[in-house]
Image (cartoon, rainbow, N blue to C red; front, top):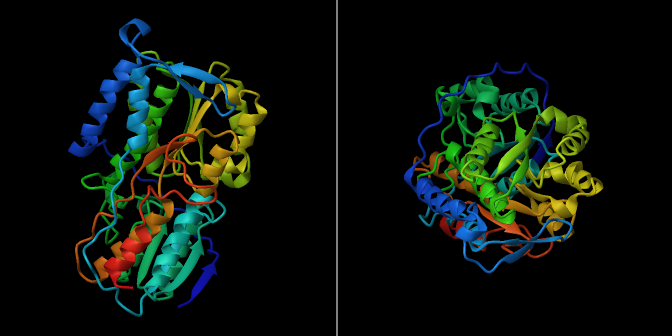
Length: 410
């Protein structure tokens, strides 16, 4: 077994691809949405309409606010979330496989953590592993894919990268007979093009890639509505680069819109360039200053909080008054919740589990078997609910590594 870390060679960026209309949500997500809607309406009712013993909640600075029983029910929906379990159908990993794991950007924990999970899983089955850092840039992502093809890779796993962002390199990989398996991104058919990957990673039963991100946004909105007792005034951050960024934003916006007294008071769009250049914290601080009535913040990728936004929340002097929740968390995110560092909650996701799930998908595709649902889902985590032990990753209480090893016979 061996592992090599490579830097990409620059290549031309791929042209943008148009988006298709959003498909109807599938039944399983719809059931959750219907339950959430019922309690949203209760949470947004006037005090005379909701008989309750108020529960105390607090912002990142510890100030307490009372919430109605309807709001607590909505919080319970967020804390329950939706988690599955790894596949139990046995499969035998093929030998002598050269896999390239392409990272969306090793400088960002939400890219680096699932890469580490995929590397660990691939090494567990005896594969040769190469890691190529795409450095938060489509040029780098495409170059990494092309390097893998040139090196004779058997499998490519793009972590946090959508097919439409670098369509041509993925086309070249497919033409060369390379098996591409999704690592948290969406295939090109997600925007109406032709599917170029052997398979996306299938996370939850009957839930499409788009619906997965909408679900995360919805759970974040459930928590915000509940924590503000149906009075949310949100600074909404939107990640514009990936295909899934608008999906995540739409899921949040749609759910928040069910609350009559909630609103988005400001929107801050940002890109990988803002993160890579280090300019995002200042842009965020400015947006927060210009939204003095905001009492909540939704951040689509928690890693940016660890890279300066959390400090900006604390420095604003409003930490006690803001309910801050982020999606796509990594282990430092839970420490930030624990340490009063400008973050109150995350849409908890077992991020390393996703890397293992991509390897399981690759094994089954190489064997000519049907890809299995991997089960890596979501639960909202805050200081009082679902928080893992200090320094430990969030797993949803599932020993996924043991489950995969048993299924693989290793």
